Image (tube, rainbow, N blue to C red):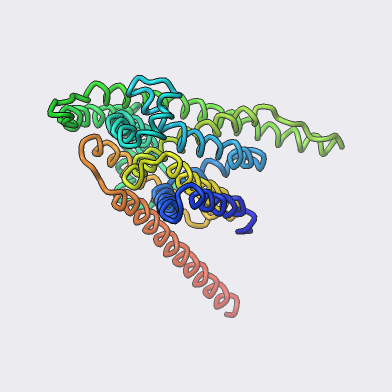
Length: 379
């Protein structure tokens, strides 16, 4: 099971590390290995959230996620995205940007650093909306009940998450961006950039999330209809019908997953510049990490881990909230990747232990109930 799910990840790791040695020797090997670990540690919460969405898809779309999805994730976000950042921010053509990335790495890193406030605002707002929509929803299973109960009541207010997100964006733009980077002794005001990028992140979330939610509802309706048709066909001895709507629903959920993955990878891509400004090593290291995140997502789905450890999804969403706020703070202040990665791991680890304790309590309660039944029947 492990080899079947992680086989491609192991193969990509071997190829990536060999490519690193051929490209830059053992130093490059070490950098790529560190980047891979960085990406996995920063994106573990991504895998848990992805699994929650992916388990609603059929085996075909899970394969699409692992094949086409990984191409988008590795080549799109880990290779093309850093070049696009430079091309847009420095108003260069794509070929010039690639040439700059390969020939003048220091200037390239400088341009990416200048574009960071816009990236952080876009990714921060997208992730913040995911977190807010999660905590304002009234759920049957609550992890931190003392916090989640009152928030679920507040969540009944329409558009509350959007209002809070916009308030946080305004505060970020006013406090961080207006005091942003001193460049060559000149004060650079990033407030307008942060506001525009943040609103773009909010709009992206609402469009993609809205479409995936709409088609998810449609999928549920069609599944009910399909179940009725199957029962009818079974009674009449006819072959079962295929529902076309499931494809549309799965496509939009796939699209939502890709935007979600892109937002998660912002911190990994930006964090990678703290280790290297070589775009080839960055793509190799982050690409290997992205493969493991994909495989881990599918593993969680197939093992039914989220159903067994019910608080994992909560922990991952709290990690998303923390990451969103960290991204907004990094508009001005530098936060070490160790802290960014550790917060996610701690929150998910805590939610996992809470799930284990819950399962133990339920097992003990069932055991006690069974003992009482035996005693009663014995009497």
